[in-house]
Length: 171
Image 1: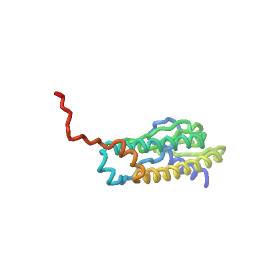
Image 2: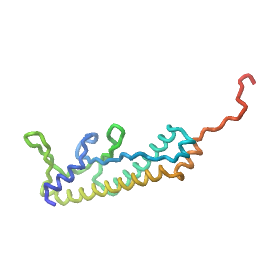
Image 3: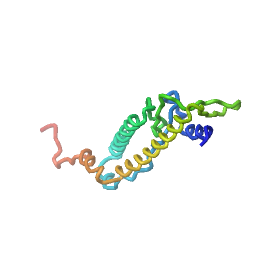
């Protein structure tokens, strides 16, 4: 892969949300529609399902980000971006791209000759992160669609049935 192609491949990962100034890379963390078991839907409210699902997603995300920061020392910060937080953005300590612009304003990414080795490593890292996120999303969806995941949550949030005798403030 030549420098131009390498630069374009890395450029495809660049973040356009611009939430973490500098060279930052975006990864789609949006989940597909999750088929919550019908038994769960019949026992807890939609609000509870959304809260529990969101908490599980955040737990997965924090675990993955922690792993990424330990494995890839070039990551200096991270954030969620997008209207619904569907993008993970990882900012770099040490950029590998130089972005120039053509006269018509189109960005032209470049890798300097002395940065080719680092840029190749960065591209491998980005591809690995992308694959790990894909795998993590699959695991999360599998969890959220399983009865076992919801067992504890259903018991915790299930509305308690009132006894037939209602409390009477006059008593």
